[in-house]
Image (tube, rainbow, N blue to C red; front, top):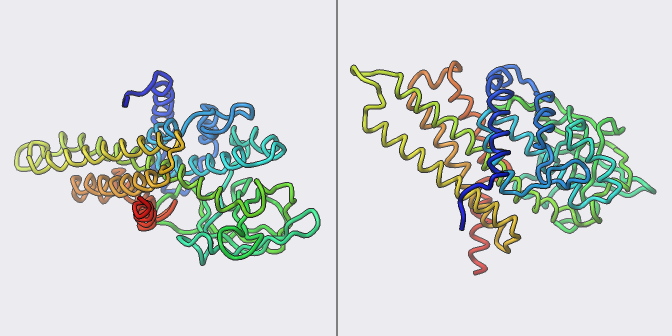
Length: 379
């Protein structure tokens, strides 16, 4: 049991940290304010290998592990939570094509996706199926050498801007075994998008519905076989939960650092507020929760890399704990700042807004408890 990072891990941790410090952090507040989608900066991240972290090297991927990804996403999120989270989504879509797609699909899309010349979205959630993902209703009916799609997807990051949509659709009967996975290109006739959603956070990435109306997609764009899509989706969510948990770590770390600095600068009753034991204890608890969450994320990532049979449970545990802890830490950091924390002059209110959704997406934290309880019942 070695908790030290390898030389390679320290190298790409430093690369991600330096990139976040120069290309993300200085602009994060502006991107949040103006709802700017920083595609150019994400392509710079791709040049460092961060757009295809666990994609094979023959198509330009970095061919790293889930543990490596957790280290990278913590650093990127320290710079900008919303942008780091979108890069995670792009990685999920790329991995799904790489892991389960045909060689033709891999070669057609991944060399450009690994550079983010093509930006990708992942489409699972629907207006009437969120936590109950197996109840999705978007239908794909085979017609010759095409599938004809009708339905819609909700809360899709990148919708309307992304070039590629990795989409779960129903090709068979009700239930999980009737779900398949298709790659759909922007500009396909019958594909349209709703108006951008007005969100609490994650404002540096657009979010909208994705609509299909007699949308014709080539049969060759099927990932894997018919009926395998739900299995792919659940496997993708294991890694997605780790990534979003790692993003919570990075933002929480930024909040702790901001609180530490403020406690040395702000004075009350004639001395720095950092001299007061109540705030010292609060900061100590924040740092302890952050370290505990980091250990859980990295342990779960190691379990997933090792294909531990209970990796899904560990990923659910880590996601639940890290996203709850991350939000609480940022909220406590805001409290330490008092009224100033509520102002946009400081980053804390943005951290709180951005982190809140981490407790909802990639499976709500209530669903994480369902997964954990179900696995415990099998022991």
